[in-house]
Length: 589
Image 1: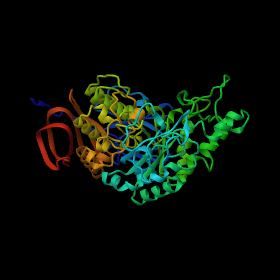
Image 2: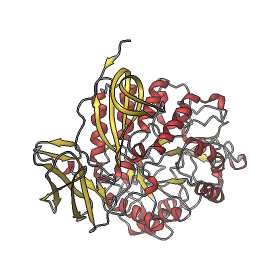
Image 3: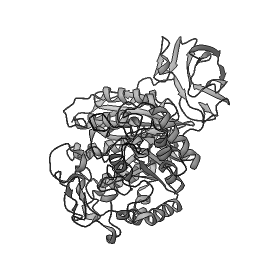
Image 4: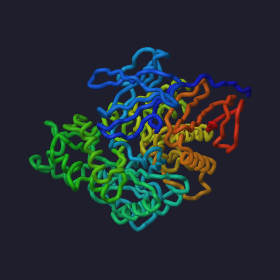
């Protein structure tokens, strides 16, 4: 195949992001002075500061490397952009332009308390407990041990395929002891934090319909197993984030059962009942009645009181929360009051542990919530997983054929990234797969080359990347059904026989994680566009004077590089070179 020549054009010369040169201190207190710098060759200009709905213009001072100004942290977020006098352009989050940008395109800087330091760029690993490893067979469920939704539960052998007809009735016996036993494996991979889907007592295998919010399911080993897991994780310097299901509970929960029996009970006020006898539930699913936070009792019971689950599990050693359907938590069966409720969850978690990390499941547009000082981040479906996987697979998360150009995928990545507050950019939970969407390698029809490219983007893009259990060894959907049923087909068991592992993928993931942890620009650097063509996507990661150029080439491509280190090959390069797949190049200073 002939090589397609590609030369680097003029890169953006004006740069401002969440890094020490640009923002000092990185997390200013409200009212504290903060120094803002624009890395640029420009010699004069103004800070354009939005304050109380009006614009203030303040002159910038020329310093080594750019322009700077020191201002009080008037509000959170502090919203601003820059104007360069000689260049006659504004510089905002999306880049430079001749006309003044809208306020929503200004830079947004949050005051403290902001994102916890440990979560910035951290590598997460998501585990669906029932399917990772059975470390203690004595606590596993037995066939037909109880009835769920009118049918007896099904006990499956570890290597039996997941079947759509049984859904959440299928139990495989994975537990917390199994996770604890494999912490060495996870640490060797480079994992720094775990995110576990629910561990609460529940009749289902997914446990999003909990019966008890203050204890660990005995089928996972109970409270002692949780305490042992937390102790071992923390001894290794690792963190654990739990799944916070505060939008709804299980219909078999004692509070809801009491509400059904006695409409005048205090418990009944925690739910939204309609005149026709129905009640508000998550997507109308009767087993998932929605909590009504218009009732102060509900707020106290679940979020705010001393014994509220939000506080309880942080005191027990959890390092944070992933909030299930975070955008739906609200009053009266709606999302009314959602912003204040998210702030309350975040505040109370931080009261119990000042370093707690709280992020949400926001499947679509995250901007509105995250700009309002609510959460530390969110699952980055809309701004990463969806565009990247649509570009590489030609199908969206629903299985519909789509045609996404390289230019479109970059535009989406850039648009979502630049819309975020500066601190939050580095704590977005970027991902390719999860318990809710099909396995990425399956979506790519088993194309390992494209899968490695997707993993390369995941582990070189800003954020806190999350690897779904088994993706690192090439785990695909749980059986051969050619459909896009993410639940439960993406929830197969982890094969502990290493002969079944794709060692090429696993070695690739280990190498990428090691580089991310060793190279500050990859772990926490800002983002700038580099160049895009029909078959090539490239961007810059910049941190404290270090710069890495990242390339994703769908076809053999000729690049022109300055003096740099090829991080994947471990050698010095410069000038013209050929690339297909992922390229990571750290520029010589």
